[in-house]
Length: 81
Image 1 (cartoon, one colour):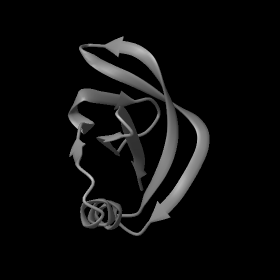
Image 2 (cartoon, rainbow, N blue to C red):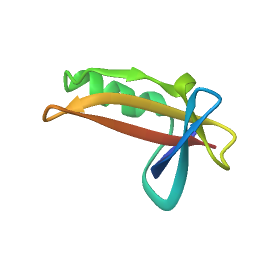
Image 3 (cartoon, rainbow, N blue to C red):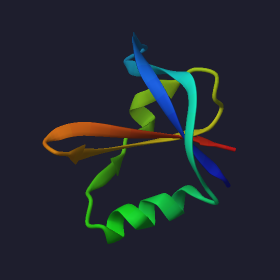
């Protein structure tokens, strides 16, 4: 299942989950989300799946990972096609 990294902005909370709205900018394309995850783990970066804690407006399938970079939290959002 191909995955495309997308840029999102937070739009508050809905039913206890954070609502993310895509801004229209797309990033890197991966043949499978596992390709990105494997690269992160090989680089010894700690990431965790937070897909169940967020909703992405207008997208049926998504994956959201969270990690730390330079002392602050970073999120990577992928559209699964």
